[in-house]
Length: 482
Image 1 (spheres, one colour):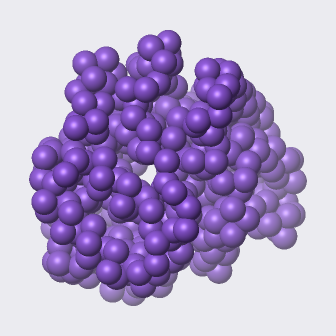
Image 2 (cartoon, one colour):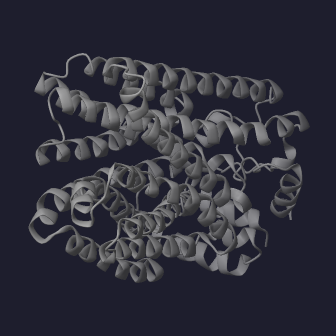
């Protein structure tokens, strides 16, 4: 019994949202929503914390950056744990650590204690998303991976609405410390995940625990029921041309990580900082909880629209990313020119929120497929780490551009809009070139990467691309040919 057999059986499942996958989405989605609610709560209680603890300007800046720095550490750390200890174990540890950091924040009495607690919480928060993404992606059949991960991202909006309710409704009434302690009660949900969510059968097979993986696949088949009526094509990475293997090593990994960093930097500037500046000298979209709820619902709508349209399978993920990210950039830049119009600002910010949610759905779907099972946790974890580094740079660069360089809000918006458009269009172009190269190599039609993966440029292989070294490539290929 080989690991490839496990992949074929999972991928042959019918692409429908059965009770098993609905339950998987709900359980992991709740942890995703708690993650987002914690982030939103941190963001909108900063002033309450600063007044209570006594923070100066420098300390307040460090407080805002601390969670991003922690997340930049947590992504690679828990990505490594996901590859060595398992996807589910990494998710449980990350969630427990983030809530521990939240509890430490509630107990802190000095500004440096609060900052340290934020970094601890950030480490956990940075590890939750890569672990959850990889877990859901690997438990899903190939034909519905895109929809499953995009639906998981939709819980970001749900968590945003919850965080707004806590920050604007509960924290002013009972205090930020009591609100933090209440959220810490979610640590009990770790037990629910432990017994309610299975480990990734693909990961179990990749580390030699094939018997456990087979038992899990049989349970999934029994719960899911119907199989797909078509034959699933399973192709080894070893069958790829040597030129493609060389082309797809560190260069492709660097492309993915750079893409995450630039999108995160631009998303922070265009989706958070520019609307904040608009609120200072125009319509304050953040002063009303109703507007914040609309923004959260817009994120859900963006992800659901992404799924319902099936654009992931029909058009290609990178092409879709280029389209929606460029649209978000242009809408933000246009909104910055009319800051005094309340309805225009609300509609613009909500539209930008929906478009960026769709953008992140594309990235979250694309990235895990690009790494082999044995290094997928690290590949996605490092991508999340670079993403948080991009957000950290954005949180420091944007105020500098406004206060020191004295750039206007429209100028800042257009600068980041041009950066984002240039990067995503270039990424889509390189992806298309890679796809055409693969198509020319496979002129006999044995591997239609667009039809098999729903993502142009992948050669119908579950294993994807190795992280950096060619030695890893050979090792994981051999595992799947055994």
